[in-house]
Image (cartoon, rainbow, N blue to C red; front, side, top):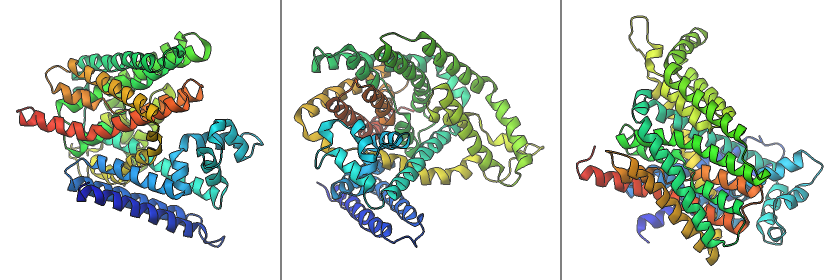
Length: 489
């Protein structure tokens, strides 16, 4: 292990120790302390950890996002090993959410609700379920839950702002220009991993019910554009042909992925395909994108002028945030990811909307006023993704074999879509579509909630998500550098 890599692990371990010990002390301050103070402390530690990760990545010549992911993995697993309630709750955030929801909506205790969420094998002494119950019921359990909610909020706000910023550095005209090609890339990027996922599951789980194969295929077809967008942003390549094509394909991929998920979930739940739900998602998504492309600039300009009369001093910042949040909400109501709505908002907002009557643009740009917020919150998203990677899941050999096969299928499936990229760096396009990130986890979580995916298969999928997410910054940087060295754009 090199000195620089060792420093990352030592730094992460030190921050984890600091987080656990200092926060425990803060939690024991008594009823006279401000309940918000421990939250401030944990947020300070998270921001510090993200800064350490970015610095470590810079020293090793890697994109900042890789450092944030790695320091998150270190921080989360060291804290989990030390028994930090915060690390335990974050590591099992999906199950914690289900437990709290069941306890809130009924007379169940935390332990009773956990028994309905975890399998019996996960509730023994020293088990995952026992750890979660202890974290929620132990001293300051409610406070730890509050802190986790704040971290979750900052994480989601961060990825929303990131995609909004990415949208501002793109344009509707550029995306429309790559539209046909992006459609082909997106379709192959859905079909190829889905087919390889079916084949891999059939090989690994012969005789398994068809819904298992379908859900694994659907999970492998997902794409998380947040990771790739951050890599292009770190490398200052957001305006490259590869970035434009990937972003266009990712938007289409999100729509197609949701349709696939709706079909598969319908087959599992009822044994039939619900064409009305598929048609609803397709029609509303098409209308949403058509309004953005053809009317978005005009609508945003009119709203900006109206907002300027309402709030003349901080118009750029407040209008930009309002537009991003509202469009994220609209996208979610349609069935799309909220980050697609934020990306669309970034596409249509422009500094010309705030120009004086003589056409002059005075003051800071929208990009300049939003950038500091994005720099604060976006790293929390990647740090949290790293903190949710449980390295203990890789100790089972059969799980490792399953994860390796699924990872190969996931990578190859997305690389195949790069073949349709046309006159750009095809390998970079394929690699840019590889990360599954939070989208893959959402798909797998739906399968698990329906009882289709068992614990072993879910662990294998989590490892696949982890690997595809972690290798993208490294491989994409290498590929773009190779292409540039050969005289590419």
